[in-house]
Length: 428
Image 1: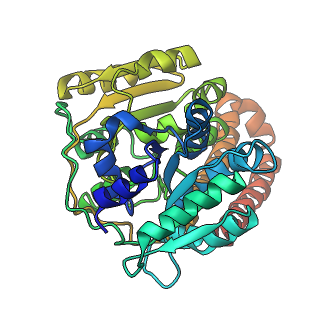
Image 2: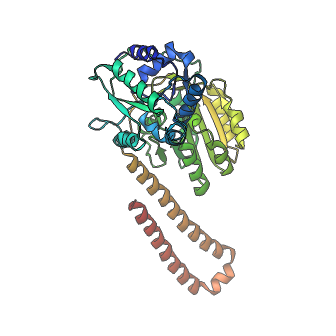
Image 3: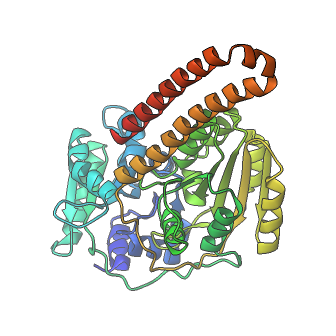
């Protein structure tokens, strides 16, 4: 269905306010909103915020709002749906337009298939009436009227669950910015600059796919990379906590849409006080992978926000020269570091997806990490023992036989521990 026509039907039924988080299945709908209805559309930081925004609109106008989202965002809005919008609490009528990624019997990524399987059961658990709409759906006008009548009478949300290819608008979003740094170039430059034993964490979407592509092109293994799929907005806390407990050098590649979704993570990350953590924000001021939908963040000073949140150092760059100079300077620093890189909205549309599953990614990441730990433990013991002899040659000479037997015994024990650790990792 043409997205513009769908919106016109909503408007004819007095639904003229829209808020939510963009989705690829709804990209034509979202593009139409931003092109022609920007004054009545608010792109929310996350889906829970969208429910709150819709509630504010209803309280001001008593008109029914519409919230749009991908089904993966249902989790973000569970609490406000239950404790705010529910007919048993405040009773806020609203329409939910949900893109159904991972719909059963369709081909999709594993994280979407998991979400797709629980989408309808979740709505049923929440007692939210829903309509399934796809490219074979007839009488969409009547369905919309019935949904509006139901949400108004019941004072409870009502959902449309939208299948892929329902919207067929050919109108494309032409959003672009003036920044010159390409995201893939920035990622590669950072990967090349930091030592080979740096651990990299990358957020969901094109950032992880570009990191995967770079590794493939440079024939580098993925054993130091944690490529996030799903769980948008959470990669920074995963990376920062790993850095704090592992004491390893960690670089986190984040996106502006993802960071904005859970911006409250920043002061928590800074409180961990990791000495070798760099948080890289790749900011193109839009939700690019779901249709280049612009974010309301072009006036946001992320550098100042990071500093106020407690990061020890924070930087912002928008050209290659400043990026290289900043990376050189960062190498001399210790502590939580925040680096915003303002990047071009242009990127490849032919990026490969990882050829291994998320579970496999986790397994070889853990295997590499714990192998490093076991090797380090043995190396510390061996070095300490030999160092003792070097510092105390006379004592060593008097007790050489006894010490040598002790060394061999401990050597065997440490090798046994190393082997056990490796076996534990392989069992994951």
